[in-house]
Structure formats: structure tokens, C-alpha cells
Length: 83
Image (cartoon, rainbow, N blue to C red; front, side):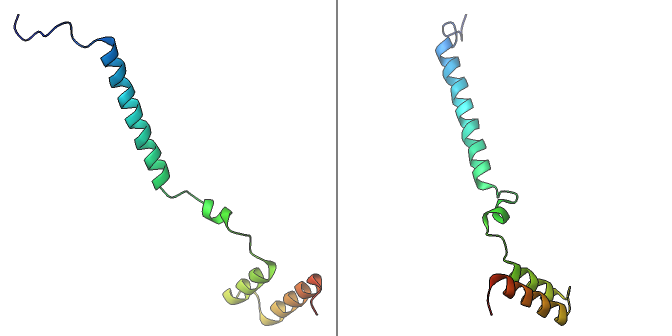
């Protein structure tokens, strides 16, 4: 019979081929996980906003009026002990 070259691949070749594909798949998955941006960890990594920053942001957005803003800032100053 022409075209037959022995008994085919041995068990070592099959094992090597299987390990190669598992290793390649692992490298691809690792690269995808490392390159994609995480879904929210950047917010957790930052320090939480201070109460003054929150009041300032609310006033800038127009959520509170000037009197409320000044009253809340005064209360925050008193709580911190600033005069």
C-alpha cells in the first residue's frame, strides 16, 4: 500500500499536540482578560468623595439653592472644628 508511513502518530505526539492547544488557548484567554477594561473597578479604586465635594457638586448641578448650600457648608465646617 502506497502512502502509509508506519502506524501513525504515537501517544506522545497526541499528548504533545493536546498540551500545545491547551497552552495556546490559555494564553489567548489570559491576553483577552488582561486587555479588556474592567467593568467598574476604576470607581472602587478612587477615594470616596469628601462631604464638601458632594455639596459643591450638588450646588453646581443646581440641585440645591444658595441658602441650603451655605447652611450645609457651615454645618460641615462646624463638624470638622474649623472656624
